[in-house]
Image 1 (cartoon, rainbow, N blue to C red):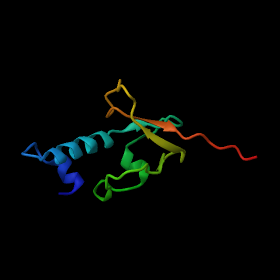
Image 2: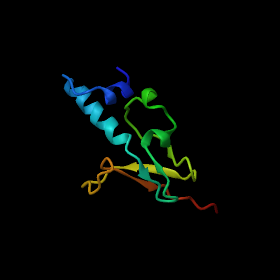
Image 3: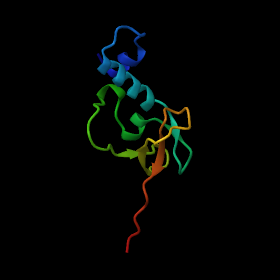
Image 4: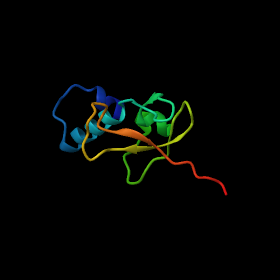
Length: 98
């Protein structure tokens, strides 16, 4: 089953793995504001991958705001205080050239 189909399918007898994958996808499609320009984008837009092409894997994906092109870090706080999927963007510090 494709990721987009898993999100759209009404609740049926999902396996525990499908339930967890569906929850993660639901969080990642939530849009949050870029801390630099306030443009709202979701995780898939930031990594430049279609939701159906995304594979959950170990390691960080390269994220970039599609509006201002700043590099972003997908961050999940220890205690989620917002309803935006429980995550937010952080700016990757710009390295000074010396």
